[in-house]
Length: 161
Image (cartoon, rainbow, N blue to C red; front, side, top):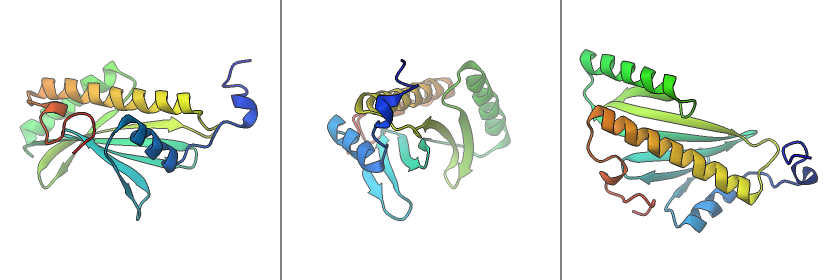
């Protein structure tokens, strides 16, 4: 019987923020745990992430701090580019938002965890999601003509400061 029909006899470990933090420790990645709104916060270069464990979902939120100008021409170009990216891939869906520094990019991947995940499944889910977002943001940086991506920030891409 396939594992997804009978996950370890109903004993697949629950996904918790502590298990996600342990995975980050095992990878040698730097992170912070937030207390007021429980989550794990990390960054790789210009890309920052918040990982939350919410009931049946592990949500991986990512931001690419592009700081593009907040003008109509940029907004139109960004909308068109994000639409093209979103039509060409299933995950991660991309969006933009404006803050005090200009246009920023966002991605999010929800992972269904109601049945729990064993260590290999958690490793695969986190690796796959983080890599998919990084690859997408790298392609987006190239399309936007932004130099650097993960290598352009203050951090290298191993999560260390």
